Image 1: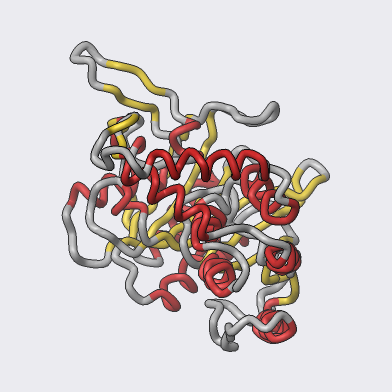
Image 2: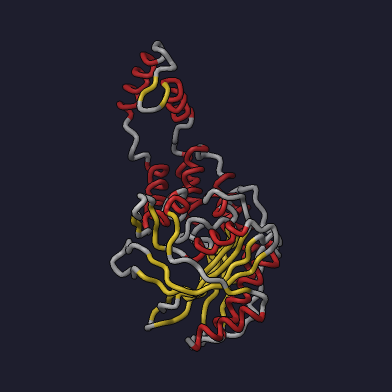
Length: 345
């Protein structure tokens, strides 16, 4: 309780307002989204057969509360409480204690991203942890890289971007592009012969909820975007990009050298990151390309603060910027950035 009170004081002094969040949310608000949120929810039906869920994430509940206010001005909120998530791994906990802070209608990206990170460092300073590592990344760089790769089809570029946070599936996509292990040449010949026969039928006929015309258009799209050996080169670029980790001062130079070496038309300026110098005591600041892969709604800047707890490195504070969460939940698009402390550590 003493720790939370010190966090409260820091956030209030920085203009954040404390809010209370409901423990339940209408399931449909979260079910609009795919991926980790939906898979993690504990859901139930009330007496009117409406489905509700225990909140799987406090940022999601805060976003819903902000949306209900229908505000067009900048809001700075903080909150604390429990999040309830269905364990996906053996050591995952079903109940997580969180403390978080958000800026909604955050249209000054550089200023607000910096404030969120610096506030996180102030909170860290009030804990028992003496040394830490701050990693900063940006998903925009990853998206820009993928979109500039010349040998991967638009269909696969979209998949790689959408499933970046699902590591296992993402790696399966890379394997497909790298080895073509899933392509059966005999099946392709057979499918082409079948498509020729189907083109002679009524194109408005519906099969499985789709017209024959749309089915054949989808087939043609796949045939016009074949995978060849050149995609192996692009997969290698993606894998090497995700290995990049360096001091934040060297981030832009390291990235630009990488893009130049691989003939990628992309340039990162020196002031691209909200914090670009190692000038915080006992905190090592790094750039990491392979960051932001545990939360599906981040879209831009992401960061994590790692500490040593129970003799191992663990993420104590994490956060980032998200642009599409409220839109995906059925509201207007809203720029927001936030962070949370994992109080279970």
